[in-house]
Image 1: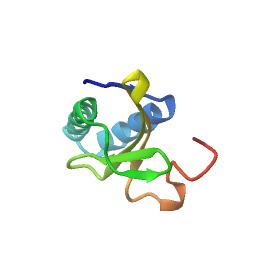
Image 2 (image 1 turned 120 degrees about the horizontal axis):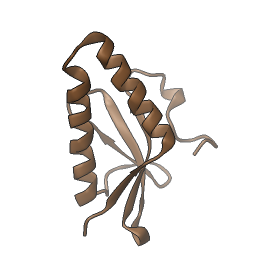
Image 3 (image 1 turned 180 degrees about the vertical axis):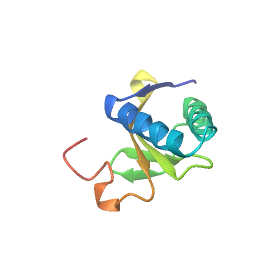
Image 4 (image 1 turned 90 degrees about the vertical axis):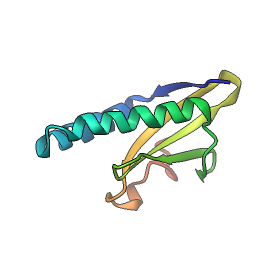
Length: 102
C-alpha cells in the first residue's frame, strides 16, 4: 500500500519559512532541506507508522536538518496529513500538539 502525503497550510507555511531562513545563510541549504523533506515524504508514503508523539499525532525527524514532521495517518483514506514542520531548537512549549490548535 502506498499512502498519499498531504501538507496542511500551516505546515506549508512553516516549511516556506525554514527555506527562507536557510536561504539567508547558504545557497545550497534550501535545496538540501527540500531534498530532506522529499525523502521524508517518500518514507511516509511507504510506511507512515512512526512513533506516536501525542494522541494520534506521529512524528518523523528529517535527515541532516533539526526538524521533525508531525502528522496523522488516515488509514481509511490511505493518506498522511502533515500538520507541522517543527524546528528542534524552538521552545518545546510551542510544539504543534497538546493544544487546541490541531
